[in-house]
Structures are given as structure tokens and as C-alpha cells.
Length: 143
Image (tube, rainbow, N blue to C red; front, side, top):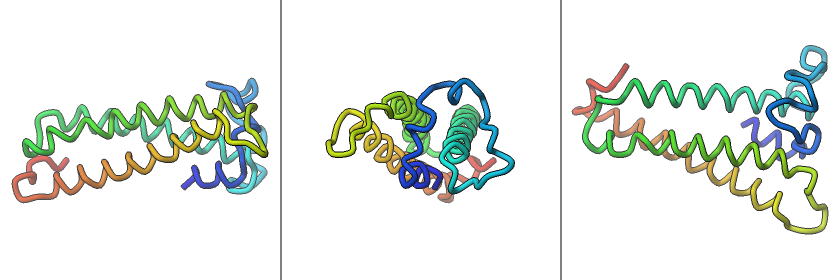
């Protein structure tokens, strides 16, 4: 949901650098300003949630290596691939933010829309894998 705040606030141009945010790791406003209305804070939290989701997905992928049904094992790599693609698109979205056009649809907008689309695919892939792990044959796959 922080992606919605990012898009709504048009927060990407406020810190169009990576891996830092305009030369710092954490904005000075984190403790004193809103976490949903301040573009710097929203971008920082969005990035941290992305890193957390990436780490969790890698952990989950490793942990479920030999678990679940054949169908689950066949599909369990999709979240990992989509998280990687999502991170790459997120980085490029931030880096291309200075090219954001007010009256035209350019490279920034294409990358930003792809970032949002991959987020939806990632969510669907997580639900599909949850469903595949919840069947009677997949009870051993729960951890």
C-alpha cells in the first residue's frame, strides 16, 4: 500500500537516487513528520518494505525447497522472479523520476506503470502459492 502513497504523492522525484536518498540513508524527517504525507518518509518506508519483502521471499524460497506438492514446487519460483523484477523496476523508476513529464507519457511513466503491474502479478503469485500450500497433500509444506 505504500506504493499507492508513492504514486499519489508523486514521491519519486523527491529522492531520485539509489541506493541512498539524496546522499543519506534515512531522511531527517522520519521521526518528526508524517509517514503517509511526507514524500521523503513515504519513499524511505516504501524502500524498506521492498527490502524486507525481498529478504522474506528469498528466505521462503530457500525454506520451501523440498516441500509441498509437485504443482507447488513448479510454481514456487514465480514470487522470487517477480520480487527481483519488482526491485529492478523500482530502482529504475526512482532513477528516471527526473524525466517525469507533466503533459506527456514517457519512459518514466512506462517504467512506473510496469512497476505497478509487476506488483499485482507478485501479489497474485503469492496467493497462488498460498493456495497450493494449503491443500491436503501440502500439509507438510507448512512451516
